[in-house]
Length: 318
Ligand code: BDR
Ligand code: CA
Image (cartoon, rainbow, N blue to C red; front, top):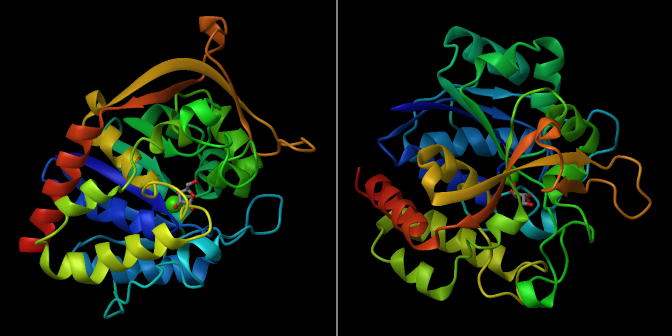
């Protein structure tokens, strides 16, 4: 199987992404690292531990950065609940917390298997930026780096979304929460795969998607239903047709890149805007030698939901 390290801030859609990754036999989650994001670090770490335990993942969890590089924390309790998992109540207390910092776990895991680890970031990019500062050769050693974050702004009423961003008009949450870290990550000389809102808004848990999740036993009753109901009722998503399961899309790319079409582009992160801080300024027409990212544009939604549902079924029955 393909090996992944998931850096996350669970987070309801993070919880669904972890379940997706663990439920696929083609993927092996070798480490989980946590970052402050949707809720403070103490909660994202506790949630990652509890989720790993609940899903039966035998994976080390390492705690990472509790604060962005240069700003005060920005959280999203109105979407994920005060503790980060909405109405999901897990029996608790996963025990696989390592004594190592997430930054060292990222470096050591990737260094131990050059060319083999897919690094997947589904929270603010603080840990990844710090790891790049400490060990720049990470960019050569990873198999690939995929992040859920950003937006190139194919928005507007005709695209079915009212603004490019979801946190401010132009900025997506993970980049807005730590724009300096995102700028480090996009400027590091590798080719991040940017799975941003333009893509993840095509992955909505609509009524017909939710129907696929019936008959999944405890996973459905204890995670999918309370998680998606809470998330779907939140201020951000209640007027929309099903909330987007953003973070699962980054896992989907690692599972099978043919599920997501990408285009090379130049991406720069705005860190000093009056209205645009955290915007991922994307130029698809830039000179090829200036390209620094692969930007996700189209999701093949049917096969995507097939893969997600299969993974949840596997998890529910084992
Ligand atoms: C991203 O922000 C978080 O709230 C979600 O977990 C996801 O990673 C979407 O903008
Ligand atoms: Ca997340």
